[in-house]
Image (tube, rainbow, N blue to C red; front, top):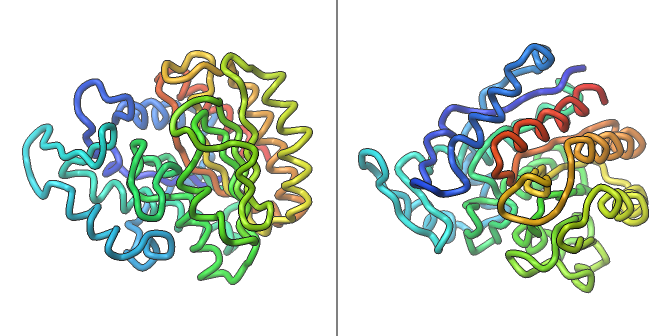
Length: 313
């Protein structure tokens, strides 16, 4: 079976304004790299819009309406509204956010149905900072958490794991999973750094949260040690029925927003090992979605390494 690629041009119309790091050019760089010959066998699929009922499994209805109501209905060029100091919406943001969440739900459905082996969602806005009742950190809705609950609601599985290797801690996913022992959130991230969460002492209701902070300027050796000694053994012990990945590439050595020193090979390495665990416990089922990454060249090359590993897995 093949790897599916979910995306949609609407995600390019989420305008964050001049100079904002979470810009449409990020997705353009990723998609251009995935158009090259080595990725010709990707099963390319249009991301549908998520239904509000799917989003409401994570976010209360009043909060959903608040976010959607904050989006300008019209305006040429940059007609922007601010959710918080760094989270911006424009007239194109409504469809982009719905398709970003919808991509992950559709990818979950395709993987669970056995249509494809695994999937990567090349979408924006990202999602892992979005808490159930707070949009923040460039994120509107928590795409990966919405996808995890889609797997439960439609496919009846219980145990879903999200592995997040974005350089920033996914406070929103942690908040969404914290009180459910059958949802496992694992994060490697730089510490200290935005958003200030992700301490090892944050363990969830049943040790279902695993935070593995890395010091500034840590690189391949520290990242791989944390994965080999803690992340992978605990993931195996959890025995997920579906493995999901919050694939942020801002831990790359060239990224301007943080100070880790990961390389493309590190993203291929961790992807290969997550696929191996999925083969053992989840019939190989893996769904990955794009989070951060703000150096365009590094983002494109690291994403290519990740998707290449998914295709070969």
